[in-house]
Amino acid sequence: MHYFVYRGEELFVEEVSVKALAAEVGVPAYVYSARTLRRHLKVFEQALAGTDHLICFAAKALSNLSVLKLLAAMGSGFDIVSQGELMRCLRAGADARKIVFSGVGKSAEEIAAALKAGILMFNVESRPELYQIAAIARRLKTRAPISLRVNPDLDPGTHPHISTGHRTSKFGVPLKQLAEYYDEAQALKELEVVGLSTHIGSQITEPEPFREAGEKLAGAMRDLLAKGIELRYLDLGGGVGVPYQDESIELEDYASAILKPLRALKVKLIAEPGRVIAGNAGVLLTRVLYIKETDVKRFIVIDGAMNDLIRPALYDAYHAIWPVDKREHAELAVADVVGPVCESGDFFARDRLLPLPRPGDLLAVMGAGAYGFVMASNYNSRPRPPEVLVDGQRWHVVRERETFDDLIRGEKLVELGPEREP
Ligand SMILES: *Cc1c(COP(=O)(O)O)cnc(C)c1O
Image (tube, rainbow, N blue to C red; front, side, top):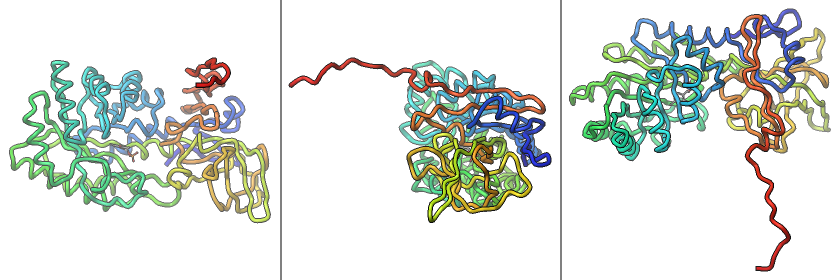
């Protein structure tokens, strides 16, 4: 559910004409709908209503300051994976006591920064990380709240790059060794052992992997309790998929699958949704440059590229592509939609049936709110696009388009002189 809708032939974001917006800010540009973001957070809250819980939006999915601020103002906490995200969240007004820190490679500097900020907990992924956090807490004369991230060893049935809950993945502590890890953690007096966490993968569109994760977590909690280890938090991670095409999972089905096995436990649940909050709340707006016909193919060449949105190249991801102006008699045709970057991986769609646009027409690449701008790069020395946040009739440029000066910031022109014999 989102608020990118046609009025007659013309695409609107909430109350704002996309064409008028493009005329003002130019393209390519990311456009987000505040109403959609709010709605998704609210619906997720409702799915968990009745259980003691905290939602920690996964900042890596969409980390623009204004978006974080909007979610923080609605009471959301945050799941972070770097010091940069910690700083973004704090700058956006997040409550540090609602921040959880995930990731397999937290550096000493990042751990110290999070400890000083007073975050809710670290989701620890390995034994050396436990000792590292304890040592830093000792140096800072404080105690570190931690949970252990368990790898439940299951297959969430999603793309291998975004599947994290199988025992061969780099994430988490093996289920079998969990008890040993808790014993070790409890022996370190600088650690306050408060929780158990997991995250099994992303873009999961079936309830089954969540049910399986819930059962394994419930089993692990019961085993720990039997050993006298009582935990306050159970962090379920994120992973709920969004309908990019026609795949979909209802939030009620997700919630009932994962919650059912956990009902009897006396813990506060934490959920870390990213994609399901932000995915369909944003589009990448682009313009058609050329229609190129060869003897075997038709290419729609647009001014957006893989540096702006890398998901198709990286995960073979499907994104719907909508015309901003839906002319009545546009001919349907099969084409590849590609960008200007010098890589054959620079595509948005392959052999897609769509209304054939003309050069100069605007296209909206749908479902680009999550893992869109945050993964953008300057490859091919292309400035990153602006981000625009629409709210009702109003819109705000919440990140400016980069300039040539931005592209070369920090670079030096050094004088090396002519080549000399050694
Ligand atoms: C990426 C990530 C999330 C968010 O995943 P989504 O699929 O976007 O919901 C949550 N928790 C952790 C630990 C992550 O790495």
